[in-house]
Image (tube, rainbow, N blue to C red):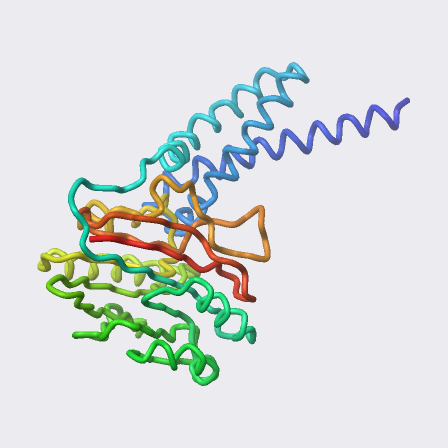
Length: 317
């Protein structure tokens, strides 16, 4: 009898600790201005919400009103962030669209050897433009089957997880290589012309926020992109592994300061990373479009050995 009582107490205690942990993680991002690393905890708002709902039910059944109230507070806090994303409307501005373009973005993960799986997925999706990140010389040498169909390319292979490349069936009218931070991370800005219209695409991959220096570099990169877009007046797409979720404290820089809209609106959260830890997957790969661009379709692609899922987006303008 005593052993069963101790077992019951230990399980209740563990659930209480879990509740307090979720509460701490839910509140911590509000103090990211004081401690930069607390912003990383904002990425898991959906997970906190799900756990909080479970805790509310458990503590109500157990008649532990204090912990039920704490859990309910966590539900409210995280729902404020998650619900607007889940209930967002698909971006479909009024107007006529004469051109359509399909994009395929993938962070291939430099060490990944499954080149053929990626190639087959691209050939199956038949995009007009393929945007790859974390490519090195090995990756680029293995993409011959794609290069034969995507003859217009920009390639910056690197061995440090910051290689980047563009493969296009549409001629590239103009392009620039940007290095917007002191970290030496390249981004590609290029223009495609379709009849009398053009579209400018920025493929960018800020450094992962694993330390304060990289965190600040990511913010610097977002600000540089926003500044670049302010002086342009054309159809624009920003796409890539942004190493930030929509709840990150610096994500609004790319939205509020530019008028860009996330193409995933109306399609749920679309988590892309990490593919080997399904319960912890978060949306850090994004496609942002200027407000006059219509999002025809948006989805995540299939696994191909990378720690990221691809994005497949079809746009019209």
